Image (tube, rainbow, N blue to C red):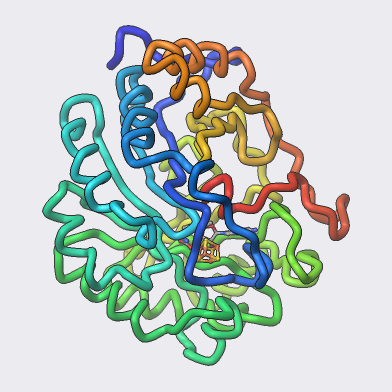
Length: 332
Ligand code: SAM
Ligand code: SF4
């Protein structure tokens, strides 16, 4: 553990960082971003060297897990070089370097990622039906994603699937997804839609509480709650019949903030202390002007800004997003 750990104003130690490496994406998932999403000019996005500097600053302060995300991390040019560089911290402060991906490019990246020390990937997969996949992602194809998932498994990566539960879109497929993930040996986590950034539709139309998902699964399966906690919003259960692990990310129906151990950095270097609040510190210009020392000092200031919790209740907001930035901006 670092001699100078990052402890916030409520005594929570920050050990986990999600770092967005790009705001760009080859998909336009309807719950995530509008079809005509405007992406950032390149000069505003952290360079690969800056991404490395930011990640390394956190590792020096005791962060032991880093998740690279986006946008779609695998569309960022030089992504593999970034991972290869950061892998020097694995076993030297960093316990885990992972990524969340939509899987579209995973077939070509799976082996080199494993070779670079990555052992786990989270792949977002909301449906196993090709037509629905296109409907949800709007620009994506299912086949390359399934190939990518198979390549990840073959390369020795452990795969966790993330499925956003969407009323009227994939709710009826949930038991099939559980069965498929179980056959493949993949953990599966369900996510509720979160009110982040404006999109075309009203999210309340698609909001499916995971209490309902779980109740429906329990009509045929026995789910046993697991005490496992990761400092985030996920709660886990095991399927008694198979031992399969299922996760439920319910930011809207449960409060998880008291044990929160994480912060997020956007592709432009904005450090957000909470996914659902605006408290932030701009790291990019500090780093460009003051170098690593300025960055390190900013982390201490940031700790005093971490809020106690978020306010995400979707019904109370009707269509309005809780925060104006999209998930692809903050990094999911
Ligand atoms: N592009 C990668 C992917 O899709 O896995 C990584 C970034 S994406 C923003 C990370 C996760 O956030 C995905 O699992 C996605 O389904 C989820 N997500 C995006 N917008 C969301 C929203 N408004 N509510 C809940 N989950 C969301
Ligand atoms: Fe892209 Fe991921 Fe957002 Fe879908 S959820 S649009 S894949 S960033």
